[in-house]
Image (cartoon, rainbow, N blue to C red; front, side):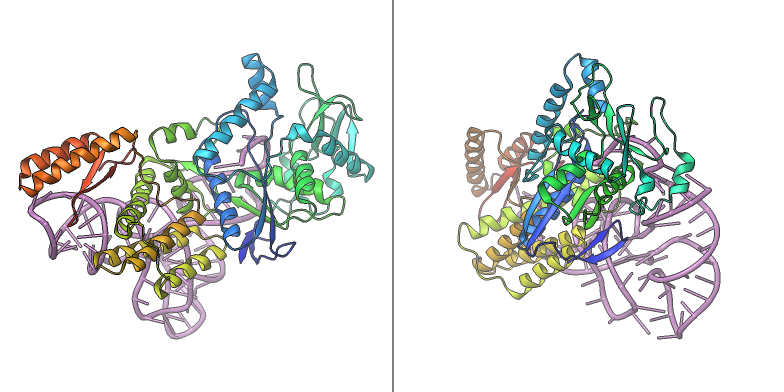
Length: 467
RNA sequence: GGCGGCGUAGCCGAGUGGUUCAGGCAGGGGUCUGCAAAACCUCAUACGGCGGUUCGAUUCCGCCCGCCGCCUCCA
């Protein structure tokens, strides 16, 4: 398996620290607002990677944090006149709910920054003792001059950074590029006791402390959005490696989500909330969109992309629906050579830096072959094998081939069944006028009717679908 | 300005030094069907521009043009 690492800027053979195990840390959100599409893509991408590693037999430990102490949280709390902790709590709940809807597996560990202050203080003290950090007026700064390879991850040269760096009023840095490990808290801000007086942690230190706490030194993969490379991950790396230990072996960064070609970002107001999208669309559309381009490329999530992804998703689900009916509960047979070949294609694609677009193409090849098998009346066991393979590979990516649109209520299902049976009778009497009126009426109610040689089948139209 | 990336048929989007291909969406033509839908088959002068390397480049190199990201908080 090859994985591209931001640090080495090339694909490298993946060799886990502990054989058969993968320790993965993915930067989670700062919980001051609801998630947008960018958060969705990042989380889905790493969820798919995690699922694939599990599929390949690795014992994966997945850690993803919540940053629950931060300026923006404090600002929001002040605006609303409530405690910062309440703000964080609200948006952690919100995040968990959205990620569940997206089918993202909950992290094995989802540590909160505020629950790890002692570990951070401990790490900061060690950095100070080692001469890598210094205290100034209740703040503690990391001295970037003390870390030789500072800038290596983001490809920055220190003197170039130096040129644009500024020191905010009230800061007491020796060097403009030094960054805060610990900030003396101002009145009204959350604060914790520390050897340097009451304060709160800097942004970057939490990930260093928590990844070490749960994954130890030299863990396998550290992931996050491309926009975290600098300064966040550069600084994390400096803090964690300055004492001589190893940090992440591989740095993975997902490309950002664009809106009409421009980066989606909270600060510019240029973003689409996840809520807005999920109001009208199956969460799986978001997942398929996220995975139909390579994770390192930027993507545009516009209305046209959503429609295209919806149609693609429906193609998979439609196949599963027909296959399920064709097989009607029988056990799938052995996978034939064709199926093996596509499975191997899927694995080869994913082994090559998680090439999900190519992996998904293999699924579509299976769908076509499976549809062919149905059309040509192949044995149930064979169709079943295609169906099972499609379902299994979809699941590796976190997609559910089986989950077509759901009925609003069970009673509605029964009513539709009734109308369909009446319509079948009309069709047998060749009363095409009545049959067509019933089909149109059902269509208005969101029911798609498809006649076949074995009688009519129907399903609920998926949300947002035009047909 | 510095660093990085991208530019593939109508759209989205993989990939490769040459021989059959990505895949999806949309569109044309068929098959099937009472009609429709679904499904299957089939169709389009695709690789930003200019040079270079090569027997041969979309794929390697150089230059140019265009777009985007990071350099401040950000998945």
